[in-house]
Length: 388
Ligand code: PLP
Image (cartoon, rainbow, N blue to C red; front, side):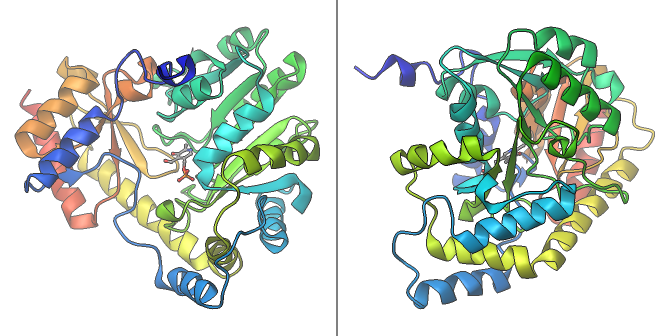
């Protein structure tokens, strides 16, 4: 019999990715589908990075690599963090993981004992509840108001935080594209200090902030470096989703014992992938800038295409690679809207409900097809909603 632990993993409320899987099945059956569902790029990893990986592998870097990441890579990640956040960061406060997703799991393992509560803001990245279950934690959900730009409600958060062990936040946010204001982040930091909580800050979209705004990491706020764990990744910024290269920045007291956990689980990230990441961090600023500009331009196009719409409302996001459409005026749930859109027009979007109850009556559109096809799909979506 499988363990209770593994049997407890599936979400009793159903599979958030069901619509994506249906869309994939349609594609496999030969039907073209416009995939606006998952957050993967419509282009492949830049050639300069692939060349670096191939060169590293051919030069012999194919054996076991340093488990917490090569010293030079940890130093480059620390330097990046210091540059972006202004918070002093040493290589000993960094560990390299196979993607931000594993860093999230490791952060929970490092901070929760079985049953400990972790507060997260709804809407949340769809894997959070599963990752918390996998780490034997208990999720406490605190809704953000769609009519207030999905910014967290600090009073509700302070209440939910009582007796919890950790708070998990994500800004720029997936799915909403919201960037938490400085005031909100200061408020969150205050709650963490007052309630003596770990703050797990998922910053995988830290380079994808638009309109000239800059990223504020709560780790840089007073008294927060010793209680914050930052999750980072090159998946989104450098088109490296398949390469699985992420990291965690945390106090040394957390990073040092995690070494044993990494030996027990991943045994490190391939050396040639680490070399590719090193190249991305030291020579890849132009790639990240171009990625950010691409999604910003697509966001602008989406805003234009939904101007004056009756059935669908779009509150312009400030970062990441998605737009959330409020379809409550159609009277349909996000799930039904997404299912009908897929069935009738072969366009796949994600139902808001997969990201939490606060996003009910919304659908998330990933801006991950090229501009002309995206424009066509968005015009179709608007007409579809108007005709409901
Ligand atoms: N965190 C957020 C908010 C995400 O949107 C994603 C991917 O979509 C991840 C973490 C995980 O990214 P990766 O494991 O590819 O670094």
